[in-house]
Amino acid sequence: MKLFGVIGNPISHSLSPIMHEAAFKALGKSCAYLPMLVEPNQLDAALKGAAALGFTGLNVTIPFKEQVIPYLTELTDGARAIGSVNTILFKDNQIIGHSTDGLGFQWAAKEELGLEFSNRRVLVIGAGGAARAIISQLLKLNCIVYVANRTFAKIERVIRDIAQNRANQIVPLELSTNKLAQVMHQISVVINTTSVGMQETKGQTPISADLLHSNQAVIDIIYNPKESLLLRLAKEKGCPTQNGVGMLVWQAAKSWEFWLGITPPIDVMYAAVKASLP
Ligand code: ATR
Image (cartoon, rainbow, N blue to C red):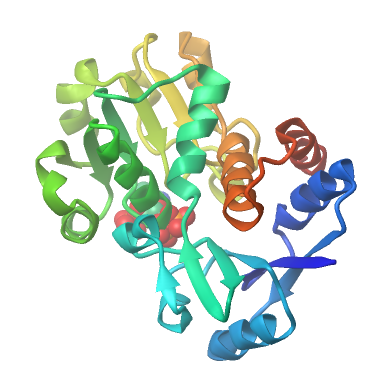
């Protein structure tokens, strides 16, 4: 039997075990995928333990995506570029860190909205961990990425850390209606990567929905609630919309490719996630 799991803290809310287990079962694969709560001071021991127990792979979630890096023996180029790891492969005594978040985001938008990002002007709201993965992917696709964040200084950090030779493709913006209004007509895709709109802030949007144009695709990486207020208002305007389920599923699918060299049954994963959400 091949062993997999997700490490994080907290971890009980994670939908990854349900999603991966459903896909393994559908293919009749002899694999197990476990949620594993790790204390921050036990991260090194947890990885060495998983290696010693013969685990094939792990996913990594909050708060360990960056913290895990010193304990890995190798990083893929993509993970190094964003300084974040969501997938680990144990192979030949190596512990290899990889990130599938950016690719997962790209594939979800392609499959759900038919969106190809190449050369587009895209607005990313937020400059946290999720935003880094998405921005890095968009830069590779030759997008001009407008980044708006509540804490402006954090955008400068993102540029320093991940832009490499593509800093000229990033336009930093204050997160204010006035500033955004000046550029919105140029934007073809709006992406919310902040937590604004999640359960605790269900009645809020990260930007005023009045700014949206009906020809803009609007993607929110929030999946609980399934339809954030931003998405509901965007849909009312006629914008194509997409929630965070697709990124969740596709980053998992890209983890399978890294661990096993195969693509899982995507529809099974979507169904497992949707059945678990209120
Ligand atoms: P994740 O890994 O999910 O991206 P994160 O790294 O903590 O989480 O980033 C959270 C993002 O949501 C940040 O861009 C944060 O803005 P700040 O950099 O100003 O903290 C943004 N965010 C969280 N709450 C917000 C709020 N109430 N209004 C605007 N932005 C908010």
